[in-house]
Image 1 (tube, rainbow, N blue to C red):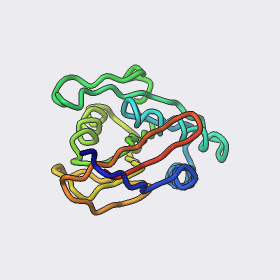
Image 2 (cartoon, one colour):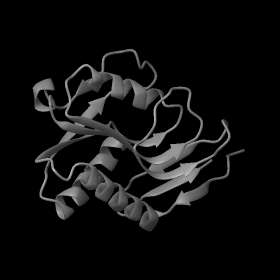
Image 3 (cartoon, rainbow, N blue to C red):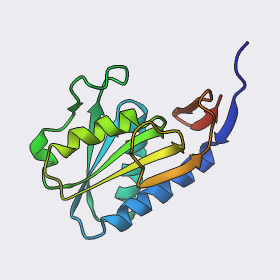
Image 4 (spheres, rainbow, N blue to C red):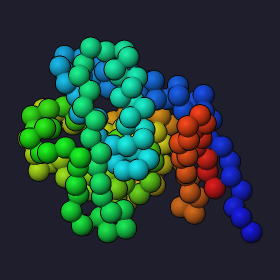
Length: 167
């Protein structure tokens, strides 16, 4: 029997959350000339591109996109990024993922950037679940949910219809 899906964010709500997160990032970096928006592959990077597009629309800040590659099943394996380390050293960085679940993906992404001197570092997620195994928090979040451990949050980005649901 397939688990029932309950929509927690529809397309319009997701667009609103993306815009709000972009404004929060802008407010936190208003004096910066450049921000690195780093998204955890795959969905985190899709979300990062959407947030970066809004940031480019509302601010004068140069936006540099960075894709972060990490093995979610083997988080101790090396983290790679689409940028060279020098391209984000001494810069403001925002690390983005779609869902903060146990915290393992985000914390290993954070760990990668802690090896580099940064000007400012923040995290953002679309959905923040309140079941974390690791002491990591999202500085900017679209929605916070208290869910059971058996429930799963899934975010689907498509060309014209984004949706987040709980199953």
